[in-house]
Length: 300
Image (cartoon, rainbow, N blue to C red; front, side, top):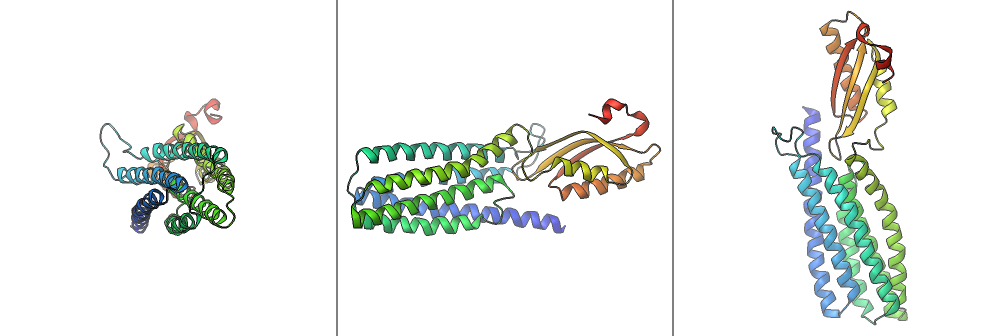
């Protein structure tokens, strides 16, 4: 019951983070667009568009979590948990495309720098730093447990970095009229975001191909099973991600000849308890007596 309450609490925390992040950032987008139109600032309008794509991605992440609560049915026997993986992959692609748009705009600014009110730009962008930082902190606790939460965290921190660049560029333009500085900062930030996004993209693709995330050690999983009393060998072991936060496992467990049903159930219970500590949340185990196993199976 305690574990169930912890899971529900985690879901509530994630939902709260998503809702708050979406509302705060959408309100800031409205402010940024109005300020951009009023000052004729292309940098603010571009940053607003960048924020809008991120809000859309975070909204899709929230939708994926809501789908996790949909009941299983005869068509989707695992439910809709896989949507969290698909959305995380989509978010990574969107973020990389957004970086491409920023780079395109950066090249344009290099060729045609335009004077804009730097002070106003800096003030509006500074508000963006505060909002994005607060929103990102809401996802801090769960950012390494779930790549979908990591996706939202990456989007928000990248927004904060972009806003910081706009602030620096605005201040520089206000005092020095060095309009090329904004383009230079945009390139540096784009490189930082690409580096942080690459891991998200790699993990999303890996899960889409039924791979194992970095926090699951298959050798440790095998050791947990093999070290269980009564187990002789484990083979045909497969591990994959059901979602961005839940992993599944199937395996054939070789036990001693003559082990009774009660003993097998005790071994199963012990193994599943150990697997939970190894981030395996759904395990299907098939038990076989040693006398029914051939040598080829033991090496499979």
